Image (cartoon, rainbow, N blue to C red; front, top):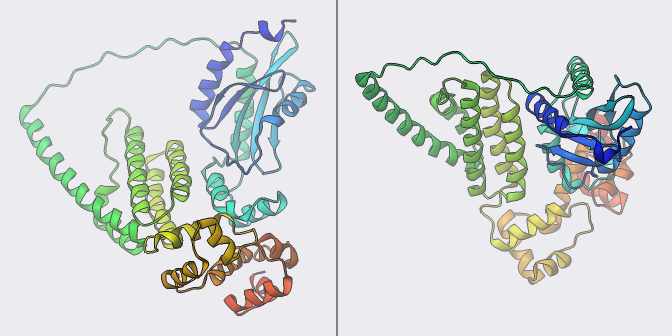
Length: 410
Protein backbone atom coordinates (compact mmCIF):
# COMPACT_ATOMS: atom_id res chain seq x y z
CA UNK A 1 0.00 0.00 0.00
CA UNK A 2 1.25 3.48 -0.91
CA UNK A 3 1.75 5.98 1.89
CA UNK A 4 -0.53 9.05 1.74
CA UNK A 5 2.45 11.27 0.89
CA UNK A 6 3.38 8.99 -2.02
CA UNK A 7 -0.10 8.88 -3.54
CA UNK A 8 -0.40 11.05 -6.66
CA UNK A 9 -3.40 13.41 -6.36
CA UNK A 10 -2.66 15.52 -9.47
CA UNK A 11 -4.97 13.41 -11.64
CA UNK A 12 -7.77 13.97 -9.16
CA UNK A 13 -7.20 17.74 -9.18
CA UNK A 14 -7.98 17.58 -12.90
CA UNK A 15 -11.07 15.46 -12.24
CA UNK A 16 -12.25 18.03 -9.67
CA UNK A 17 -11.86 20.79 -12.25
CA UNK A 18 -13.98 18.82 -14.72
CA UNK A 19 -16.70 18.14 -12.14
CA UNK A 20 -16.74 21.79 -11.04
CA UNK A 21 -17.18 22.94 -14.65
CA UNK A 22 -19.91 20.41 -15.43
CA UNK A 23 -21.99 20.53 -12.22
CA UNK A 24 -21.39 24.23 -11.36
CA UNK A 25 -21.27 23.14 -7.73
CA UNK A 26 -18.47 23.27 -5.17
CA UNK A 27 -15.97 20.41 -5.42
CA UNK A 28 -13.44 19.37 -2.78
CA UNK A 29 -10.65 16.81 -2.79
CA UNK A 30 -10.28 15.26 0.68
CA UNK A 31 -7.27 13.20 1.78
CA UNK A 32 -7.55 10.12 3.99
CA UNK A 33 -7.04 12.23 7.12
CA UNK A 34 -10.19 14.22 6.38
CA UNK A 35 -8.46 17.41 5.23
CA UNK A 36 -9.40 19.34 2.09
CA UNK A 37 -6.25 19.49 -0.05
CA UNK A 38 -7.88 21.03 -3.13
CA UNK A 39 -11.08 23.11 -3.31
CA UNK A 40 -13.10 24.82 -6.04
CA UNK A 41 -15.71 26.86 -4.23
CA UNK A 42 -18.40 29.27 -5.45
CA UNK A 43 -20.77 29.17 -2.49
CA UNK A 44 -19.46 31.13 0.47
CA UNK A 45 -21.28 29.55 3.39
CA UNK A 46 -22.49 32.21 5.90
CA UNK A 47 -20.31 32.35 8.99
CA UNK A 48 -23.31 31.58 11.20
CA UNK A 49 -23.44 28.07 9.69
CA UNK A 50 -20.72 25.86 11.12
CA UNK A 51 -17.87 24.88 8.80
CA UNK A 52 -18.06 21.56 6.99
CA UNK A 53 -14.38 20.88 7.72
CA UNK A 54 -15.02 18.78 10.82
CA UNK A 55 -17.45 16.57 8.86
CA UNK A 56 -14.93 15.48 6.22
CA UNK A 57 -13.51 12.75 8.46
CA UNK A 58 -16.97 11.30 9.13
CA UNK A 59 -17.74 11.25 5.39
CA UNK A 60 -14.44 9.49 4.69
CA UNK A 61 -15.05 6.84 7.35
CA UNK A 62 -18.46 6.03 5.89
CA UNK A 63 -16.96 5.61 2.42
CA UNK A 64 -14.02 3.59 3.79
CA UNK A 65 -16.39 1.03 5.32
CA UNK A 66 -18.28 0.48 2.06
CA UNK A 67 -17.50 -0.90 -1.38
CA UNK A 68 -15.30 1.08 -3.76
CA UNK A 69 -18.23 1.61 -6.15
CA UNK A 70 -20.35 3.29 -3.44
CA UNK A 71 -21.19 6.97 -3.18
CA UNK A 72 -22.42 8.76 -0.07
CA UNK A 73 -25.44 11.09 -0.16
CA UNK A 74 -24.76 13.21 2.91
CA UNK A 75 -27.17 15.72 4.50
CA UNK A 76 -25.96 17.81 7.45
CA UNK A 77 -27.97 19.39 10.26
CA UNK A 78 -28.52 22.54 8.17
CA UNK A 79 -30.19 20.56 5.38
CA UNK A 80 -27.23 21.08 3.04
CA UNK A 81 -26.80 18.09 0.73
CA UNK A 82 -23.57 16.61 -0.65
CA UNK A 83 -22.44 13.64 -2.74
CA UNK A 84 -19.08 11.98 -2.07
CA UNK A 85 -17.17 9.07 -3.56
CA UNK A 86 -14.00 7.37 -2.34
CA UNK A 87 -10.62 7.36 -4.07
CA UNK A 88 -9.38 3.78 -4.16
CA UNK A 89 -6.31 2.04 -5.53
CA UNK A 90 -5.55 -1.65 -5.08
CA UNK A 91 -8.33 -1.89 -2.48
CA UNK A 92 -6.73 0.88 -0.41
CA UNK A 93 -8.62 4.06 0.49
CA UNK A 94 -6.80 7.36 -0.09
CA UNK A 95 -9.51 9.97 0.32
CA UNK A 96 -12.64 11.23 -1.42
CA UNK A 97 -14.14 13.75 -3.80
CA UNK A 98 -17.05 15.76 -2.40
CA UNK A 99 -19.62 17.71 -4.45
CA UNK A 100 -22.01 20.23 -2.88
CA UNK A 101 -23.76 21.85 -1.17
CA UNK A 102 -27.00 21.59 -3.12
CA UNK A 103 -30.69 21.13 -2.28
CA UNK A 104 -33.38 18.69 -3.41
CA UNK A 105 -36.22 21.14 -2.73
CA UNK A 106 -36.74 24.88 -3.12
CA UNK A 107 -35.94 26.59 0.23
CA UNK A 108 -39.22 28.17 1.39
CA UNK A 109 -39.58 30.73 4.18
CA UNK A 110 -40.95 27.91 6.31
CA UNK A 111 -37.87 25.80 5.65
CA UNK A 112 -35.61 28.67 6.75
CA UNK A 113 -37.72 29.29 9.88
CA UNK A 114 -37.42 25.61 10.82
CA UNK A 115 -33.68 25.71 10.15
CA UNK A 116 -33.20 28.77 12.38
CA UNK A 117 -35.27 27.23 15.17
CA UNK A 118 -33.68 23.76 15.15
CA UNK A 119 -30.11 25.05 14.98
CA UNK A 120 -30.66 27.98 17.37
CA UNK A 121 -29.39 30.48 14.82
CA UNK A 122 -29.72 34.24 15.46
CA UNK A 123 -32.83 35.57 13.70
CA UNK A 124 -30.86 38.63 12.60
CA UNK A 125 -29.09 36.30 10.14
CA UNK A 126 -32.35 35.18 8.49
CA UNK A 127 -31.98 37.22 5.31
CA UNK A 128 -28.35 36.28 4.72
CA UNK A 129 -29.08 32.60 5.36
CA UNK A 130 -32.15 32.60 3.10
CA UNK A 131 -30.29 34.33 0.27
CA UNK A 132 -27.51 31.74 0.54
CA UNK A 133 -29.95 28.83 0.33
CA UNK A 134 -31.74 30.41 -2.64
CA UNK A 135 -28.41 30.58 -4.47
CA UNK A 136 -27.84 26.82 -4.22
CA UNK A 137 -28.59 24.42 -7.06
CA UNK A 138 -31.82 22.45 -6.64
CA UNK A 139 -31.44 19.05 -8.28
CA UNK A 140 -33.78 16.10 -8.74
CA UNK A 141 -33.21 12.59 -7.40
CA UNK A 142 -32.43 11.40 -10.94
CA UNK A 143 -29.81 14.12 -11.32
CA UNK A 144 -28.23 13.29 -7.95
CA UNK A 145 -28.11 9.58 -8.89
CA UNK A 146 -26.39 10.48 -12.16
CA UNK A 147 -23.89 12.70 -10.34
CA UNK A 148 -23.16 9.89 -7.90
CA UNK A 149 -22.66 7.39 -10.73
CA UNK A 150 -20.40 9.83 -12.61
CA UNK A 151 -18.41 10.57 -9.45
CA UNK A 152 -17.80 6.86 -8.73
CA UNK A 153 -16.54 6.24 -12.25
CA UNK A 154 -14.28 9.30 -12.27
CA UNK A 155 -12.92 8.63 -8.77
CA UNK A 156 -11.85 5.11 -9.55
CA UNK A 157 -10.00 5.83 -12.81
CA UNK A 158 -6.91 7.81 -13.65
CA UNK A 159 -7.46 10.99 -15.63
CA UNK A 160 -6.63 10.85 -19.33
CA UNK A 161 -5.74 14.15 -21.04
CA UNK A 162 -7.88 14.70 -24.11
CA UNK A 163 -6.84 16.03 -27.52
CA UNK A 164 -8.99 18.61 -29.34
CA UNK A 165 -9.74 18.27 -33.06
CA UNK A 166 -11.36 21.25 -34.78
CA UNK A 167 -12.77 22.04 -38.19
CA UNK A 168 -11.01 24.52 -40.50
CA UNK A 169 -11.99 28.15 -39.88
CA UNK A 170 -13.55 29.99 -42.83
CA UNK A 171 -12.72 33.68 -42.68
CA UNK A 172 -15.78 35.87 -43.48
CA UNK A 173 -15.55 38.30 -46.39
CA UNK A 174 -15.58 41.90 -45.09
CA UNK A 175 -18.42 43.96 -46.55
CA UNK A 176 -17.62 47.65 -45.90
CA UNK A 177 -21.16 48.91 -46.55
CA UNK A 178 -22.62 46.32 -44.19
CA UNK A 179 -19.97 47.16 -41.58
CA UNK A 180 -20.88 50.87 -41.77
CA UNK A 181 -24.57 50.04 -41.41
CA UNK A 182 -23.84 47.83 -38.39
CA UNK A 183 -21.87 50.60 -36.69
CA UNK A 184 -24.77 53.07 -37.08
CA UNK A 185 -27.25 50.47 -35.81
CA UNK A 186 -25.03 49.60 -32.83
CA UNK A 187 -24.66 53.29 -31.95
CA UNK A 188 -28.44 53.73 -31.84
CA UNK A 189 -28.91 50.60 -29.73
CA UNK A 190 -26.22 51.66 -27.25
CA UNK A 191 -27.72 55.14 -26.84
CA UNK A 192 -31.16 53.57 -26.37
CA UNK A 193 -29.85 51.18 -23.72
CA UNK A 194 -28.06 53.87 -21.74
CA UNK A 195 -31.22 56.01 -21.75
CA UNK A 196 -33.33 53.24 -20.25
CA UNK A 197 -30.54 52.04 -18.00
CA UNK A 198 -30.75 55.38 -16.18
CA UNK A 199 -34.54 55.05 -15.89
CA UNK A 200 -34.13 51.53 -14.53
CA UNK A 201 -31.55 52.61 -11.93
CA UNK A 202 -33.81 55.43 -10.76
CA UNK A 203 -36.73 53.00 -10.41
CA UNK A 204 -34.68 50.52 -8.37
CA UNK A 205 -33.29 53.32 -6.18
CA UNK A 206 -36.92 54.20 -5.35
CA UNK A 207 -38.04 50.58 -5.01
CA UNK A 208 -40.62 51.18 -7.76
CA UNK A 209 -41.58 47.74 -9.12
CA UNK A 210 -44.40 49.15 -11.26
CA UNK A 211 -41.91 51.37 -13.06
CA UNK A 212 -39.58 48.41 -13.55
CA UNK A 213 -42.44 46.44 -15.13
CA UNK A 214 -43.27 49.34 -17.42
CA UNK A 215 -39.64 49.82 -18.45
CA UNK A 216 -39.23 46.09 -19.12
CA UNK A 217 -42.23 46.08 -21.45
CA UNK A 218 -41.33 49.36 -23.13
CA UNK A 219 -37.67 48.60 -23.69
CA UNK A 220 -37.01 44.91 -24.16
CA UNK A 221 -33.63 45.89 -25.55
CA UNK A 222 -32.38 46.40 -22.00
CA UNK A 223 -32.84 42.70 -21.47
CA UNK A 224 -31.97 41.80 -25.05
CA UNK A 225 -29.37 39.08 -24.70
CA UNK A 226 -27.50 39.91 -27.92
CA UNK A 227 -24.75 37.77 -29.35
CA UNK A 228 -21.67 39.71 -28.32
CA UNK A 229 -19.96 36.33 -28.44
CA UNK A 230 -21.56 34.80 -31.58
CA UNK A 231 -20.11 31.35 -31.04
CA UNK A 232 -21.50 31.26 -27.48
CA UNK A 233 -24.83 33.11 -27.07
CA UNK A 234 -25.33 31.71 -23.56
CA UNK A 235 -21.96 33.16 -22.47
CA UNK A 236 -22.88 36.48 -24.04
CA UNK A 237 -26.21 36.45 -22.20
CA UNK A 238 -24.56 35.62 -18.88
CA UNK A 239 -22.08 38.46 -19.29
CA UNK A 240 -24.90 40.95 -19.89
CA UNK A 241 -26.83 39.56 -16.92
CA UNK A 242 -23.78 40.02 -14.69
CA UNK A 243 -23.58 43.63 -15.88
CA UNK A 244 -27.26 44.06 -15.03
CA UNK A 245 -26.60 42.65 -11.56
CA UNK A 246 -23.86 45.27 -11.05
CA UNK A 247 -26.18 48.06 -12.24
CA UNK A 248 -28.90 46.89 -9.84
CA UNK A 249 -26.40 46.75 -6.98
CA UNK A 250 -25.26 50.32 -7.60
CA UNK A 251 -28.88 51.50 -7.86
CA UNK A 252 -29.80 49.78 -4.59
CA UNK A 253 -26.88 51.45 -2.83
CA UNK A 254 -28.10 54.82 -4.12
CA UNK A 255 -31.48 53.86 -2.72
CA UNK A 256 -30.03 53.74 0.79
CA UNK A 257 -29.34 50.02 1.24
CA UNK A 258 -26.55 48.91 3.54
CA UNK A 259 -23.69 47.06 1.75
CA UNK A 260 -24.32 43.89 3.80
CA UNK A 261 -27.72 43.41 2.14
CA UNK A 262 -26.44 44.36 -1.31
CA UNK A 263 -23.48 41.98 -1.09
CA UNK A 264 -25.68 39.02 -0.11
CA UNK A 265 -28.17 39.54 -2.95
CA UNK A 266 -25.52 40.40 -5.54
CA UNK A 267 -23.53 37.27 -4.72
CA UNK A 268 -26.65 35.10 -4.91
CA UNK A 269 -27.59 36.36 -8.38
CA UNK A 270 -24.01 36.10 -9.64
CA UNK A 271 -24.11 32.38 -8.79
CA UNK A 272 -27.59 31.89 -10.28
CA UNK A 273 -26.50 33.62 -13.50
CA UNK A 274 -23.46 31.36 -13.90
CA UNK A 275 -25.64 28.30 -13.31
CA UNK A 276 -28.36 29.38 -15.75
CA UNK A 277 -29.05 26.53 -18.22
CA UNK A 278 -30.53 28.51 -21.14
CA UNK A 279 -31.53 31.90 -22.56
CA UNK A 280 -35.23 31.88 -21.49
CA UNK A 281 -34.15 31.18 -17.90
CA UNK A 282 -31.74 34.14 -18.00
CA UNK A 283 -34.48 36.39 -19.37
CA UNK A 284 -36.79 35.53 -16.48
CA UNK A 285 -33.95 35.76 -13.96
CA UNK A 286 -33.20 39.35 -15.06
CA UNK A 287 -36.75 40.42 -14.25
CA UNK A 288 -36.72 38.56 -10.93
CA UNK A 289 -33.40 40.20 -10.08
CA UNK A 290 -34.62 43.76 -10.69
CA UNK A 291 -37.80 43.16 -8.69
CA UNK A 292 -35.90 41.66 -5.78
CA UNK A 293 -33.56 44.64 -5.61
CA UNK A 294 -36.69 46.85 -5.57
CA UNK A 295 -38.11 44.83 -2.68
CA UNK A 296 -34.92 45.29 -0.70
CA UNK A 297 -35.02 49.05 -1.23
CA UNK A 298 -38.65 49.21 -0.16
CA UNK A 299 -38.07 47.12 2.96
CA UNK A 300 -34.62 48.21 4.11
CA UNK A 301 -33.84 51.62 2.65
CA UNK A 302 -32.52 54.26 5.02
CA UNK A 303 -31.94 56.80 2.24
CA UNK A 304 -34.07 59.53 3.79
CA UNK A 305 -32.82 58.95 7.32
CA UNK A 306 -30.22 61.05 9.06
CA UNK A 307 -26.80 59.51 9.65
CA UNK A 308 -27.48 58.70 13.28
CA UNK A 309 -30.81 57.02 12.56
CA UNK A 310 -29.23 54.94 9.78
CA UNK A 311 -26.67 53.67 12.26
CA UNK A 312 -29.38 52.95 14.83
CA UNK A 313 -31.47 50.95 12.33
CA UNK A 314 -28.43 48.95 11.25
CA UNK A 315 -27.54 48.20 14.88
CA UNK A 316 -31.11 47.10 15.65
CA UNK A 317 -31.34 44.81 12.61
CA UNK A 318 -28.07 43.07 13.46
CA UNK A 319 -29.01 42.61 17.14
CA UNK A 320 -32.78 42.18 16.93
CA UNK A 321 -32.84 38.94 18.99
CA UNK A 322 -30.86 40.52 21.84
CA UNK A 323 -32.17 42.79 24.63
CA UNK A 324 -32.32 46.35 23.23
CA UNK A 325 -33.05 49.64 24.95
CA UNK A 326 -32.85 53.25 23.83
CA UNK A 327 -30.13 53.90 26.39
CA UNK A 328 -28.01 50.94 25.24
CA UNK A 329 -28.32 51.83 21.55
CA UNK A 330 -27.42 55.45 22.23
CA UNK A 331 -24.38 54.35 24.23
CA UNK A 332 -23.21 52.05 21.41
CA UNK A 333 -23.55 54.91 18.92
CA UNK A 334 -21.98 57.46 21.30
CA UNK A 335 -24.93 59.88 21.15
CA UNK A 336 -27.33 61.42 23.62
CA UNK A 337 -30.37 59.15 24.12
CA UNK A 338 -32.85 62.04 24.06
CA UNK A 339 -31.39 63.34 20.80
CA UNK A 340 -31.52 59.85 19.25
CA UNK A 341 -35.12 59.39 20.36
CA UNK A 342 -36.27 62.70 18.84
CA UNK A 343 -34.40 62.15 15.58
CA UNK A 344 -35.63 58.56 15.24
CA UNK A 345 -39.24 59.65 15.67
CA UNK A 346 -38.75 62.47 13.19
CA UNK A 347 -37.23 60.22 10.50
CA UNK A 348 -39.37 57.09 10.87
CA UNK A 349 -42.65 58.33 12.40
CA UNK A 350 -42.13 55.65 15.08
CA UNK A 351 -40.43 55.70 18.42
CA UNK A 352 -37.42 53.45 18.66
CA UNK A 353 -39.07 50.83 20.90
CA UNK A 354 -42.05 50.53 18.54
CA UNK A 355 -39.65 50.07 15.63
CA UNK A 356 -37.82 47.28 17.50
CA UNK A 357 -41.09 45.60 18.43
CA UNK A 358 -42.40 45.86 14.85
CA UNK A 359 -39.32 44.02 13.55
CA UNK A 360 -39.70 41.35 16.23
CA UNK A 361 -43.41 40.87 15.50
CA UNK A 362 -42.68 40.51 11.77
CA UNK A 363 -40.14 37.78 12.57
CA UNK A 364 -42.54 36.08 15.01
CA UNK A 365 -45.23 35.95 12.31
CA UNK A 366 -42.96 33.84 10.10
CA UNK A 367 -42.59 31.23 12.85
CA UNK A 368 -46.27 31.32 13.86
CA UNK A 369 -47.21 30.58 10.24
CA UNK A 370 -45.45 27.22 10.59
CA UNK A 371 -47.51 26.27 13.64
CA UNK A 372 -44.93 23.79 14.96
CA UNK A 373 -43.14 25.90 17.58
CA UNK A 374 -44.64 26.98 20.89
CA UNK A 375 -45.54 30.64 21.32
CA UNK A 376 -43.27 30.83 24.36
CA UNK A 377 -40.27 29.62 22.35
CA UNK A 378 -41.04 32.07 19.56
CA UNK A 379 -41.28 34.96 22.02
CA UNK A 380 -37.82 34.23 23.44
CA UNK A 381 -36.38 33.56 20.00
CA UNK A 382 -37.34 37.00 18.67
CA UNK A 383 -36.13 38.91 21.72
CA UNK A 384 -39.02 39.05 24.21
CA UNK A 385 -38.34 37.88 27.76
CA UNK A 386 -41.95 38.12 28.93
CA UNK A 387 -44.71 36.10 27.21
CA UNK A 388 -47.49 38.42 28.36
CA UNK A 389 -45.64 41.47 27.07
CA UNK A 390 -45.03 39.68 23.77
CA UNK A 391 -48.76 38.94 23.44
CA UNK A 392 -49.69 42.57 24.15
CA UNK A 393 -47.16 43.91 21.65
CA UNK A 394 -48.20 41.37 19.03
CA UNK A 395 -51.86 42.33 19.36
CA UNK A 396 -50.95 46.02 19.14
CA UNK A 397 -49.45 45.52 15.68
CA UNK A 398 -51.75 42.80 14.29
CA UNK A 399 -55.04 43.18 16.22
CA UNK A 400 -54.70 39.46 17.03
CA UNK A 401 -53.07 37.53 19.82
CA UNK A 402 -50.23 35.21 18.78
CA UNK A 403 -52.47 32.14 19.20
CA UNK A 404 -55.27 33.72 17.14
CA UNK A 405 -52.79 34.63 14.41
CA UNK A 406 -51.35 31.11 14.40
CA UNK A 407 -54.81 29.54 14.05
CA UNK A 408 -55.76 31.92 11.25
CA UNK A 409 -52.61 30.99 9.32
CA UNK A 410 -52.84 27.25 9.92
